Image 1 (spheres, rainbow, N blue to C red):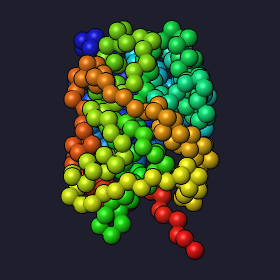
Image 2: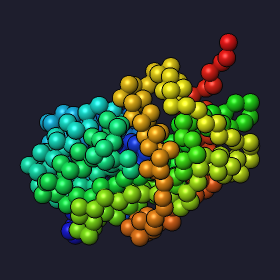
Image 3: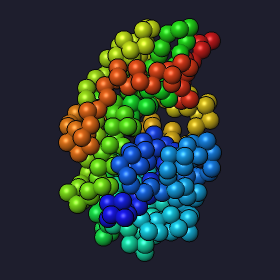
Image 4: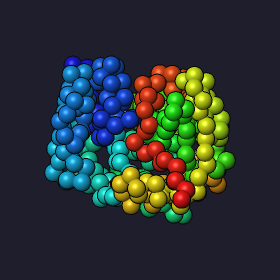
Length: 306
């Protein structure tokens, strides 16, 4: 077995938006992949069928993580928007050091910074600094809003699409999970040139949500509109859907960041690092159009007036 084939990569969040695509890419390139999942289900069984080794565990359990990193060369660390990020990063860092893991690709976010008001964004910044102090070859990814978020916030009412979001006239270039996966896989394969780098990841075209709605309309062939709402109405709507206080606090504050330009910009990192032309909004919607056949899980309906 060659050194290339002998390397084992750990992908956490392996059934998620970026994780599952990274597993697939690495397997296609002949690597061994261990996928860390919370439970065995149809998603994990699909990864196993593709050739991944499945490890069931929790990033907040030191023994689970220690077992998952055993024999691993490089890891992708991806934690959901929820409490426990700092603990999970500390656990990973210690377990990885003990196991001799060589490199990590850390999923952060574009709003991660010292002065962030969002608890999650500030914690991501702190976790970046923690990983930078380890011996691991470390690369941080700071994507703008995912293209997949459009499927979550999308509403379908009477054959018409609507985006009801508190993002004002801010702009960004939505970036798809598959495009980020190409960067993740490339850095895992060759981590040295990317050590201690923080890469903002963007899609190909920056636009406001009126432009995004128009691009979606073109791809879907139905009217799609953007309806700006207040942060307070957005937060109330999320609470009515049963979303966690941690998520609501984060999204409410990054909505303000978005309006202030934190999420804007474009670059060529996906092409240069990932050797991939990123999907436009139209191309993403066309490729994943089944996801737009119903309202998304985070869609905030309009408040009925009395």
